[in-house]
Every structure is written in C-alpha cells, then in structure tokens.
Length: 391
Ligand SMILES: [Zn+2]
Ligand SMILES: [Zn+2]
Ligand SMILES: [Zn+2]
Ligand SMILES: [Zn+2]
Image (cartoon, rainbow, N blue to C red; front, side, top):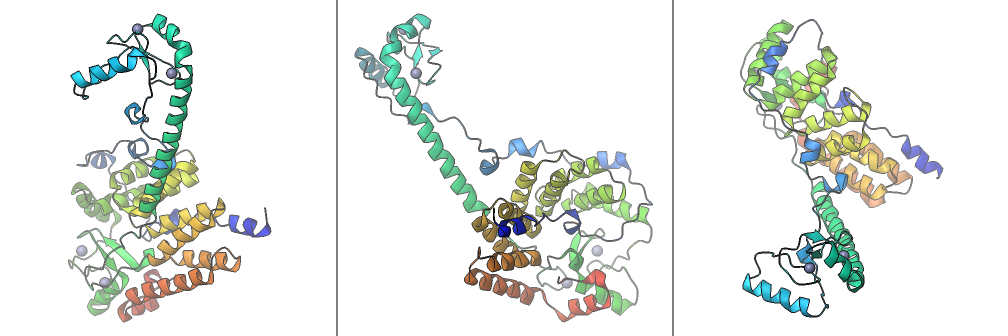
C-alpha cells in the first residue's frame, strides 16, 4: 500500500487515560470488597451475546421457510397440501410428507431443510423429483439471507451514525459540560457532574478547597472517608459512582477484574463502554480482543461518548475505510473531541477528506467551543492546569 496509508495506520486507538475523569488517586486506602459485593445491583449477563450487534456478529435468525414461495410441482402432493392449509385456516403448520402426502412428517431434507418426509424411505423415493426444487430452495434461502444481512447492516449503520446526545449541562451554571475530562468532576457528595468553572468559583469565594458548589458539602481529607462517601452513592445505584469505584480498583489497586465487573454494571453510561473497550483493546484484565473492543466502542459511541467515537474512526481509518472514518470523526468533533479534528485535517491533507468536510469540521468544533466557553471556566483553567477544559 501507499506511504499515505502507512502514515494513517500509525494512528493508535486512544487509551484509557483519556476516558477517566478523576485525578490524583493515591493507593493508601482500602475498599471493602464485601461492601461492593453487597451492592444492591444486579449483575448484567454477558452483553456480547445478549446484544444484537448485527455489524459485529452478523448473527441473524434463520430465514423463515414460509417466506420462501415453494413451487411444489410434484403432482397430487400440492393439492393435498393446499387442502390441508384451508382446513387448518393456514395458521397451524401441519407437516406433510412431500412424497406421499401423509400428515406428521418429521424427516427433513437435510440439504434445503425445508421439505419434510414421513421417513427415510419416502425421502429416498422423492429424491430425484426433489433435486431441482431443493437446489432452488437453497439458492433462494441464501439470497434472502444475504438481503436480510445487508438490510440489517444498513439499519445498524443508520443508528450508528446518528448524532448522539451530548454530556448535558453543568447543574450549577447550566452551560454545556466540556468533553475533556479535566473540565468537569463527579462529586460523590451529591452525585452531580460539575464543571471546572463552578468548582473553582466556590473555592475562590470561600477561600477553601473542596467545597461542593452544588450541595456545599466540604470534601473529606482522607481517602477512606472519600470511599465511604462513594460507597453510599454506589449503594444508591448511582452509575457514575459505580464507574468511579471501578476506576479506583483499576488505577489504585490494579485490580482490573473487579474494575471490569463494576463497569459492566454501569452500561447505560457511554464512557463505561468506552473504558471496557479500552480494556479489550489493551488486554487489561481480559484477553486482548479487537472485535470485542470495537463492539464496546460502538455502543459507547451511540450513547454519546466522543472518546469511543474517535476510536471507531481510528479503527476504520486503519482498515482503509476512510469514508466511515470521516463520518465517525465528524460526530466526535460535534461531541467536542479535539483529536478527531486533527485526524480530519490529516485525512484532508492526504486527499481522503474534502475541503468542504474539513471546513465543516472546523465549524463544528468552533460551535462546540462557543457552547462551552465561559469566563469562569477560563479563570479556573488559568489558575490550575487540572481545571483545563479545552485541549
Ligand atoms: Zn411419506
Ligand atoms: Zn431439499
Ligand atoms: Zn458549571
Ligand atoms: Zn455535592
């Protein structure tokens, strides 16, 4: 392949550090495993097998035989079948032997799997008569299945490339929350995600660090107390709290297994999918599995995680699907993901994205900036890099 493709292939999927939004976790505390086990939450079963991710698994129900019009031209059998259908008002499927017409046929043609016989003897007798029909049935079933798969993939793509919801607004200042993790923080006291600007403002007024702008609770100094506070929210089934606890297990205790278990409980959060996707991508606590990683990124992206969306763009780009990559990046840019803008720029310079697409990408990112920029947030970012909200 060309030099350009090689250059693009060097793009790597963003790792977990960007998906996690908390800072400075020291590993000096202990989290009660029993308490976590106690959680009032029900474990979700394996989501991979549960979900109908048609593009990932391409798994569909078998093509229904009654969708196939059977041209049964073997003499009297057809009229017998029609008669039976009328008697049974067509609702009940009475299996009839294709050879002798008797009811209760159970021995299926093992090639087309659509014609039944009473027994092996009937099957054998009918073999030469059925041959052409059998081939036609197989051909039609394959054609139908192909069409169904194509339609399912199209429908899935329609959902996949929809612009998902944003992170929402800061509950204190009512301005759109920044996508960059350092621009917002989850508060275990009240369970709110609050912007850097509001956190800094309350700190400046009170001249003390750690007061929650929303519920005015003073943040606890000790790690143990913090975890206690977090566990209260965990027991209330607060998905963000469960997610953050998972992060503590992963980063602090290096217990990826436990972390993954917790993240699996928070699957309506887009970033939880993204973080699990990262684990499969890097082999953290699980066996490396690109397909599973992609599956989680897809669901996360559809739930609004711009980070997961960006990674899908990278995966498509590395696979040479530049159109799909561009589509993903555009959605991620609207979601406030700066790296996607860089990728679009790269695609434009290499001739894969049009000038129009690049212009639209720039405009979309500017629109995002206009929505998140406030003087309060700027002041916070200038005061401390940990409050940075624009990349
Ligand atoms: Zn028979
Ligand atoms: Zn057959
Ligand atoms: Zn705010
Ligand atoms: Zn609070």
